[in-house]
Image (cartoon, rainbow, N blue to C red; front, side, top):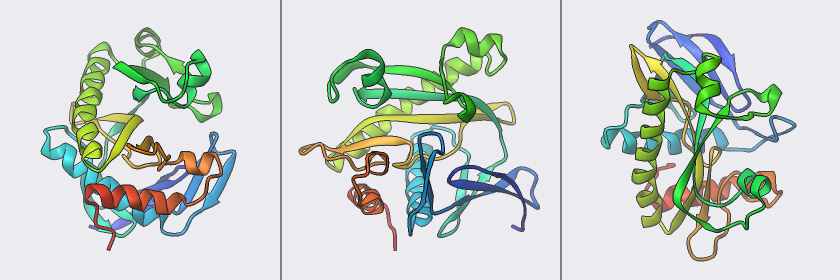
Length: 237
């Protein structure tokens, strides 16, 4: 497959066209950002770690019958994905209170949420990814009711698969965000699943092993990502 032109450059990934109109190349860079890009830093090995971590998770989700855009690894920091029409809506599931939920509601961090919560956010850095609802998404054409229902159902199916996977590695899946797109009429999971887009804590110590280490200046970001990956079976060699 021939890599051609850069189609899009995000805060931590770049997307390239290929000689196949249905396939793109996703390049995971070493860049790391926080606070809607206000803080940026390059962390050695991050692109490789997130690429391999994402490949492992997407494989597990595919095996569980959850449609994803992932096609296969291309190199240490690149993979091949389906060329989809992405929907500008982020789906968030929270199993434990943390992050913006704690700030918005004034609840204590670390409390178990039973049942888990489901939230929608508009993917818009300029507006700081505001929280939205199904009515707003439909009114402004960001997604149809049918698409929203399928995205919600798939997001909770992901929760069933990954909560157990991480629990088996002695980890708590605190919360995570997912993005979806449309490929040949089907809703498909897109973007990535890595410690950049979820919160993962050690089940015993509750040590943070995700991007909060970067946000909160705790250090050891990539070491924490690798620790998580090794616990669940990711091969970084």
